[in-house]
Length: 218
Picture 1 (cartoon, helix red, strand yellow):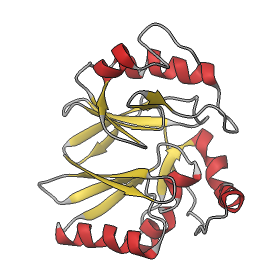
Picture 2 (cartoon, helix red, strand yellow):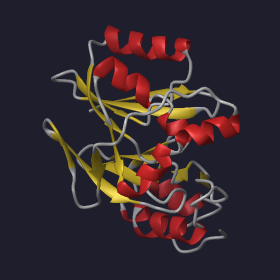
Picture 3 (cartoon, helix red, strand yellow):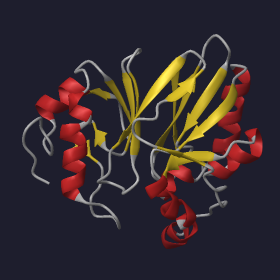
């Protein structure tokens, strides 16, 4: 699958589109498009590539990762899928938006929940769902073993990790998620993070100053 990356909104959040190049069907992950210009740009890119979104996934439901859920629903008829422990946060996203002074169109309800051990089959592709709490109670990531990449949300960044000072964040859980789940993946695995540039498992295990392979300062 081709991975398309868009950076949207006041939090510079990374939205990903995973494209089946044979069928032109695609998965939208963490839509963060905020205003009309970002929505128009997103639509124009998909139209130029003749892409058809057929799945909407949320790694977690902090406001910056769900701001485009309503737009994707309105444009393509898709409801979000997320972990059951993220649903309460999704339902309260309007309160988070008010706290930050942001405009927000209410997300549709999540009708299907994601669980570790229940992989996502998408045409001839498969995404492994890993439960990775810590930054958020209901955080999941998506691992494409065949093509060697991870859609990592806000668990692990290049040289950093997801915030642990937000409601529901648990530093010890984030360390466990990174060391016991993410760092066990092949070192050449590319991490497409929720903010910032791409990195790899191997680089972060060796150089991440907050959580290394065996130690943490969180």
